[in-house]
Image 1 (tube, rainbow, N blue to C red):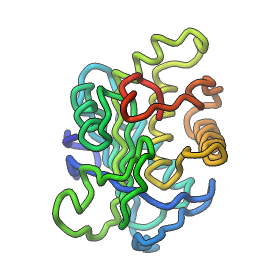
Image 2: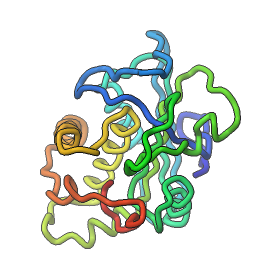
Image 3: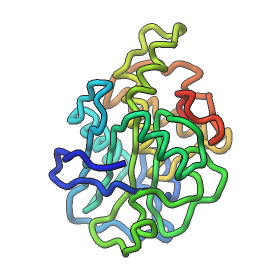
Image 4: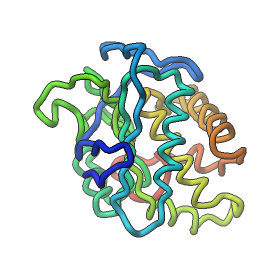
Length: 236
């Protein structure tokens, strides 16, 4: 993943991953061992569109990610990177950090002091490209929340192949992936049935508030992929 001159003026580091503690829906996330956010400062979302296969409204998705961060209680000086990449780049990230094969639709690389537990998808227990341990340097203010990486080509293909939800379009798919990935960065996951139900309910609420009220196709809520199966275009 590399930067493409994001609107915020500061390119995201081409390499990021890690993780955070899961916040309760609608509440400020707990920080665990990660240093706490200061009260002052601005939350920034840096976006880069590094692919040309699908037209992407970077400003729209930047605002959506920012709205999710605000709704989840993120305050102070913090940064999130939102990257749109092609299938080759996504496949490389999938292989490098998850041991997967082929491109998938979204990867989330949260940043925290401790590695994630292994075996979780999509944010398994390896540091991602922007993690200070990957770069070999210490993190400093502002707090780096993590990277959300989306492959619009995989997302568009999933929409085109779907016949059970004709009202679900490319914008809905990208909105879901932005929300889904941002929640992962903040510590939400779907490793168990209860966690999955909580995360999916939060996704629906955020989509209704900041995108549009839309019924998410059932298999988009329940389909899971393992690293070995990645690249099928299913939301992790």
